[in-house]
Amino acid sequence: MHILAALFLDDIQMRQAAGPSTRIDLLGVQFSAVAPQPLPYVWAAHLVVLVHCPTDHQGFSALTVEFFRDDVEVARNVQPLQIEPGRFGRQLVRPEITFSEPGTIEAHCRIDAGPTTVVPFTLLPPIG
Image 1 (cartoon, helix red, strand yellow):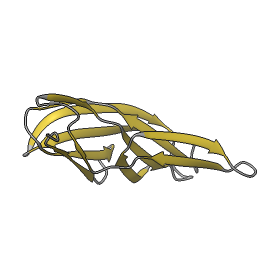
Image 2 (spheres, rainbow, N blue to C red; image 1 turned 90 degrees about the horizontal axis):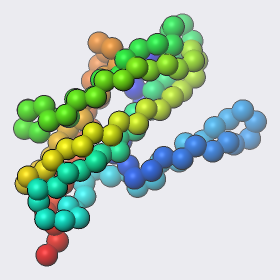
Image 3 (spheres, rainbow, N blue to C red; image 1 turned 180 degrees about the vertical axis):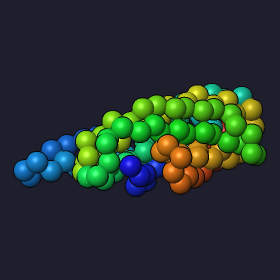
């Protein structure tokens, strides 16, 4: 299996298209946001990881996502993947990360011992 994309977003919706085809609507893709309240703030991330399973794969793997801030791990999520060979899938990862000050975290996503996809997110200071 391999990661096609990993993104922070507001919502994901699946819809049927013509025939057996499916569409995935990614809503509110974001790489930064203003803190909605004074810090410290607990941010409940919505990270979606889109995955493809080749036809010659058994269809079972593990997705690991480690969240780092300044090279320090602040959260970790490991979950099983089960995707039918030849098909696509998506996994939602929802850690809660406390920001005591504005800054950037990086989500390091990988399947089994495969390559890592890194997705940054920056929390900006609250307005006002």
